[in-house]
Image 1: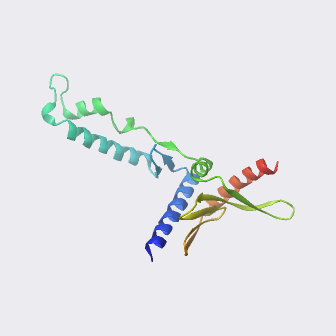
Image 2: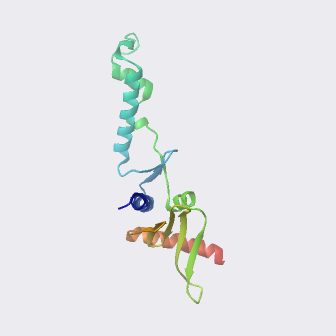
Image 3: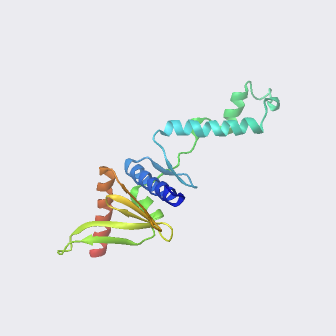
Length: 171
């Protein structure tokens, strides 16, 4: 597999994973990127462990003020809290994800009686081009192409998303 094909495959897979996570309620935004979090408690514990390691690196045990704190852990918890104090990232719905990621070019497939049959929206353009359809994600880059199917729950959610848009547009 060429580097281009491998990168395209990775990008399409990432979009599929994020769409499916948005539908499952496990897609989050932390201010710098999307996160798929299946177990929020575990995620908070790992984030807290990072904060605790940083605190330990910045505050050696020798700095402990024994007049104020009996143990280092007590001092640490007073300064950075516990895992329960870690802020949860913002959950992202499917429509929020599409509106943030998509480029606004949405196309509809309609039958002769103007009934919606499907849709697709453009996510990336110019290298690669990636379209999210109601049932799959398709990526094109030069002579390379990748197509991945969405799970049935995501297909239903995508069709509902396109139906809502179509209702607004077709009035």
